[in-house]
Image 1 (cartoon, rainbow, N blue to C red):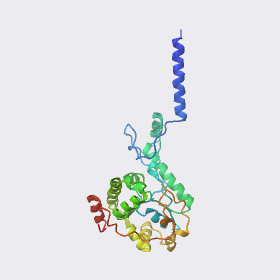
Image 2 (spheres, helix red, strand yellow):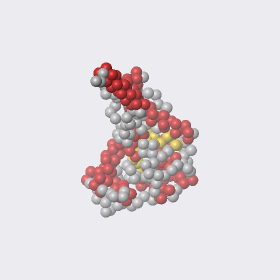
Image 3 (tube, rainbow, N blue to C red):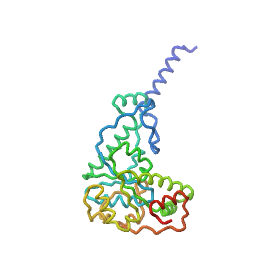
Image 4 (tube, rainbow, N blue to C red):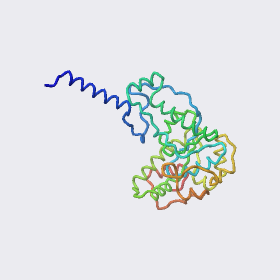
Length: 289
């Protein structure tokens, strides 16, 4: 007959073993998702920590709006570092145990603020490595989380890049293997709603892809004025500079972009039918629909 005391001891040892394994290899959290709720489960909200980069620049745009072209033009400036898409919003911190959150709270930190500190450190590291003094992140999905960026960097600066929604729909349709017209229009509308809000943000500098490709010197001069750096003619010859790899998830990788030359934007896309709200926003941005 089994001794009940030995059975209880065995259960205790097995439970302790599981806990030790979890402490060594905590459950993984899915990173590719929206940021979690502010603060901790008990409602604690940490005060902002000091930032190493106080005033980063964010390009807010839809996908397929020419943001990679704008990035490489800016990155060609001797004082501006504009790396590939950094996807900060999916760079998350996992407080895997209850005592982890307690320990961080004792340091006046919560998960959101820990993520903010991490994001800030990544920008600072990239800026330091480049030897430049202005950093630009052009990840399109930043457009969807602008309030979170503002919470992290209250002094952040924003470049809002618009493109004719019909051209964006057409570009997405051409790029995707099995395009779903309804889903594509919904995606473009989602970005457009956030851009409509962003372009009214105090201090935001608004440019269009069509203007950028038609008058690159005038548009980049305006951006340099807004960022407080002198304009450099070498910005327009972006093909002469090294901008890192052009590949999926890091930005545009098309042959047009790889050519190293600024090409004209495509003309109005007459056969693309836009939903009423997207038409309304396109007209508000000055486009002929």
